[in-house]
Amino acid sequence: MCNRQWVFVRNPEGPVTEDVFVWREAALPQLEQGQILVRNRMLSLDPANRAWMRGPTYREQVLPGDVMHGFTISEVVESTVQAFRPGDVVETMGGWQDYAVLPAASLSKRDAAVPFEHLVGIYSITGLTAYFGLFEIGGVKPGETVLVSAAAGAVGSVVGQLVRAAGARAVGIAGGPDKCAWLINELGFDAAIDYKTGDVASVIRAACPEGVDVYFDNVGGQILDSALRAMNLNGRIVCCGAVAGYDISGEPFRTQLLPNILVGKRLRMEGFIVLDHLDQREKAEKDLRGWIEDGSLQPIT
Image (cartoon, rainbow, N blue to C red; front, side, top):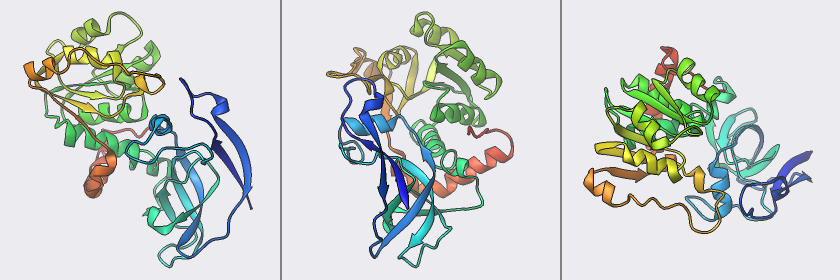
């Protein structure tokens, strides 16, 4: 059986280009005791993939020669472990390839009746990141104003809908008029800001005349700087991602507003990793399912 793979061959300087990877077709190794052969059915392509190339983060670094790391929804093909049988659907780090041989401990069973695109998205990293970031870290309350950067992205688009489900006001930042219109007309955001037009700080103030209570930050950089200026007293900044700095060599962007603005406005700024909150996953999935069923949440596939 031939396994098609994308192999990471060099660390990029600046944006990722095609020559960072090579295409390889390889034979599958023989299973050893405790291992499972899975076929990857859905692959999640995430901004974090770029961060993994830069160095160790919350997980190991992708090194030249590795199959590119990636979260997958996979189907068991062959197993040496009684707990897993062919046909079982699992989530794992299967990587950018057709098949993977993995230790059983790295697999988690999922409900085969749920569409794969929902298992890889709204009921997994994407949806759970939005849920835990907004409710556990942001502590959103009804009536508050929540500003979301990269709002047309996978996580940001879910965050905005959860804001509305929580009875708060959702304001999204995205690039271009089409994305902004989609946020308002399709996902129900209260307002959208095109960061490509005008001074972002002034546009945020216009869209959030009563200030920002929670800022869900997916980008960092100048957008973070602009959002900090609009924060209300005792506001919360949820640090989810920093895509503005992933391709920058050398010193990353550093806002000049810290720490003075944190002290003056008594802000709380906190980073998080979704993996730290999986002990609450059952409740999160139940809540997400309820919002999908009542029409408050539209899964993006």
